[in-house]
Length: 359
Image 1 (tube, rainbow, N blue to C red):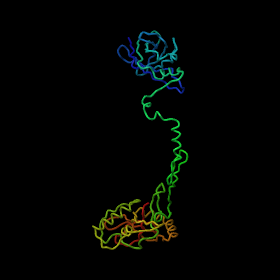
Image 2: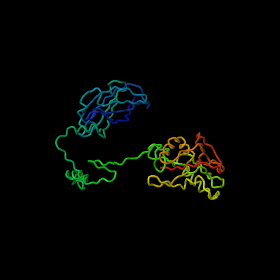
Image 3: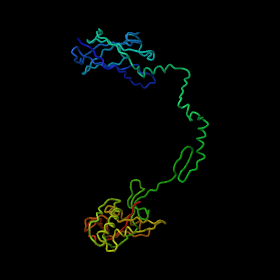
Image 4: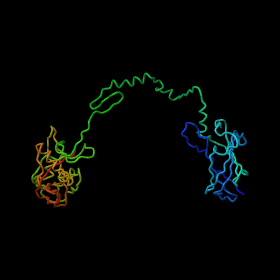
């Protein structure tokens, strides 16, 4: 003996690109035999009836299916697509009372139905029930008590016209344009390239926006000065990338106070105390370049020299220039502007200095 256990009568609506309700719904069941074992990969016969009103109500539609169970004993059919026995699935008025699905099953795959089950559709499929809207005619009046009690309910077409005209009374500020209903900015963004003379010096590196970067002074600040303040020792000025020279410079100056300062000047101090006035503006935030910043200047040496020459400056010479990057307690990094070679040199050695600043 076999039995069928219905585990799902889910009305899964099939989507349609047309503005109308779908004319089918999915139905699933699991088939087990008298020993509660799944009946797998077997053809069964099923008859589906739609009853109206009650479990024994009026039959409004009937169709037949002959599905196969899968490896899990599951059968899946689409009600509305079977072989029609009676009725028209598309004309069912789902809003007219309650409906029940009656299933009859032949486990031998034919139409000799020996198992019957009936269950109520507790929730009418939305898409099918929505068909009732297809027959509405005339005027529909919809009210919203919350909106009706608000100030917004009194807004008229004349009010919105007056709002649109308010733009004519606005005054655009500097860099702002008002045209029609559009407010926009007229300010242009200045971008820079390597070799430009700006921000107190010569641009030798810019970021991807072209609005920020690094400049070097248009001439050397020293033809020969030492790196330390007179006494060797660790300062921990180890930054070697772009923009790190500024912190290095601050660390060197701060550290020399505790390490020992004989009162004579040195590379970091020269840059820190530098004041350059260009275009009526004074720039006082210069620093000793890091190892990488020094190398970026070397890579753009020809361009920098050319710009310096036409702006009252002087080019780099083929000599060693100090970086702010410390090697250890006895030496710091320098770069030869003859061949670009970077190496360590004793902190008491005298090398040239070219200050830089960020913008």
